[in-house]
Image 1 (tube, rainbow, N blue to C red):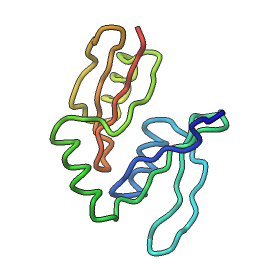
Image 2 (cartoon, rainbow, N blue to C red; image 1 turned 135 degrees about the vertical axis):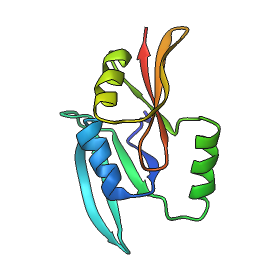
Image 3 (cartoon, helix red, strand yellow; image 1 turned 30 degrees about the horizontal axis):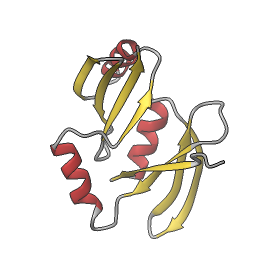
Length: 129
C-alpha cells in the first residue's frame, strides 16, 4: 500500500514559516535540522498525530519564485488544510492578523477560505459540509 508520508510547500523564509505554521496555524514542529547554507529540514505536523508531515521547504531554487508568484497572481492555493469549522478558523486567524484573499465561501459540498501564509503562498482552508 502506498500512502502519503511527506508533502512540501516552498517558503521564502523558514523562520517566519516556522512561526506562522506553528504559533498561528497550530501545527507541531517535528524536525528542525541544519542542512548548511542557511537551510534547514523543517517539518510540521498535526498536533498529537504521527505519520504525515509538511516540509517547509526553502524557496531558493530559481524556478520557485516564478512558480509561487504565478500561483498567487492567479489566486491558486499551494495546498489545502481541512478544518471542522471554517467560519471559526477564519475569525480566529483574522483576530491574529492573518490576511485572507477569500473569506469563507460555500462551493457545493465544501466551504473554503484562502489565506496568505506570509511566506509566498496562498493556503486554502476547507470544511466538508
